[in-house]
Amino acid sequence: MPRVAKLKLKHVVPAVSRLQGYLDPQWGEHGAPWMLPKVVTAYSKLSRRTCDNGVCKVASFMFGSGDPTLWTHEQLSPETHEWTRGEFGPAPLTFFKQIVRCVDLGHLVSVEGRPELPESFVAQAPQTDARFSFITGARNNCFLPVSQQRTFDHFERREPGRHSLHIIPGYGHLDVFVAETAAQDVHPIVLGELDKAP
Image (cartoon, rainbow, N blue to C red; front, side, top):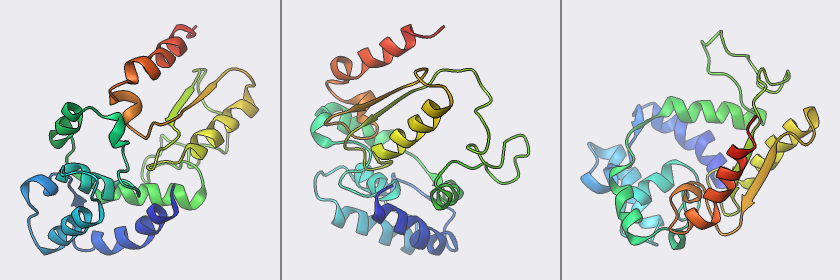
């Protein structure tokens, strides 16, 4: 994750979670319920000047760092960017606390209280025979492309040549799916990987 996003997870999330159980991108569009959410919304809007979409601004604050975090604006059509206003809702702060645990350890760990999951997902070989294709944008400000590279390397060490990695130039986090040109640039990669399935 970008350094600023890690700092927010470690210092802002614990402070906010004492007073608020969730964050909601819709505050950027429909207003926040009380003072703390109003401050989060105002900061999100003031610190992100690349668009006039309040949901985009608050979602960018919530899910990482960068302006914007979840996509690159130049990849989205105006219609898709407008569509995002209605596509994001409340996210519990417990979600971000789980991400902090994973960031601290450098890998995915199970959610507390779920005995059917392993404590660490890297302590043993994956318990599946699935083949994975890791696809991310080179400009991903939510989870840096290096995280996909490291995950791919982990799988590659265990089963060389079985899995694949695609880092798409010019793309961010979610625009690999919803960008105006994703049908030409990314979707053929996805379809090609699905065609390789046994």
